[in-house]
Length: 88
Figure (cartoon, helix red, strand yellow):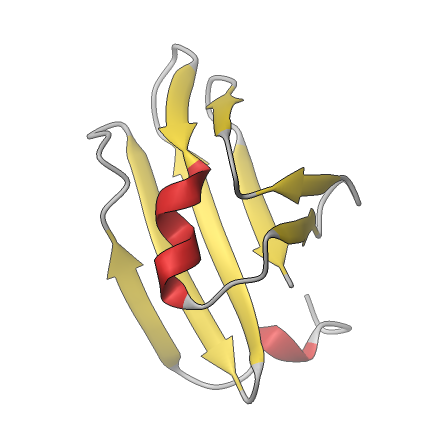
């Protein structure tokens, strides 16, 4: 976390994931956004990622944990207790 400037500051906003088992929030630092999506269930959970484009994120983001690029134009299944730290 220390190597990523997006974790600095205090501008965070909880966002509606349309799934009670999934917490989502967006954190802004200067012009960089961090979208956190976390599954708090012991079952896989589907999340429609396109809904998060309305928060100004780019169409393709990168997961800081895995390095994987993820398109915000489709759904995504979170495994039990999986979380994503998505940066633009």
